[in-house]
View 1 (cartoon, one colour):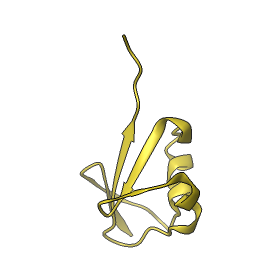
View 2 (tube, helix red, strand yellow; view 1 turned 180 degrees about the horizontal axis):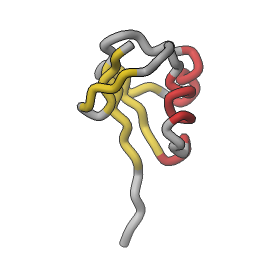
View 3 (tube, rainbow, N blue to C red; view 1 turned 90 degrees about the horizontal axis):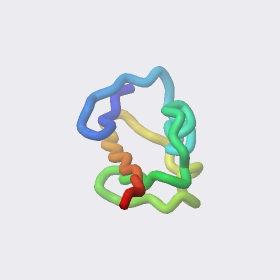
View 4 (cartoon, rainbow, N blue to C red; view 1 turned 120 degrees about the vertical axis):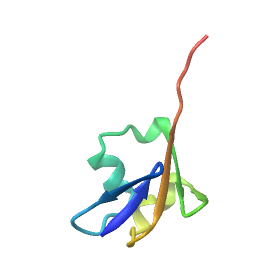
Length: 66
């Protein structure tokens, strides 16, 4: 299966949920926002969304500073 993450095409060996993808990437769910096919997805919905071939994911992380 092929998905696009932040504009880069990636192959994954099986279908993942958004939660699985975040975990596999080693990301902190508290510090990111996920956009799935041009829709910002609330964290409560991550487990219920199975990624499909040609899906587009944007992962935006928050960075603090001063």
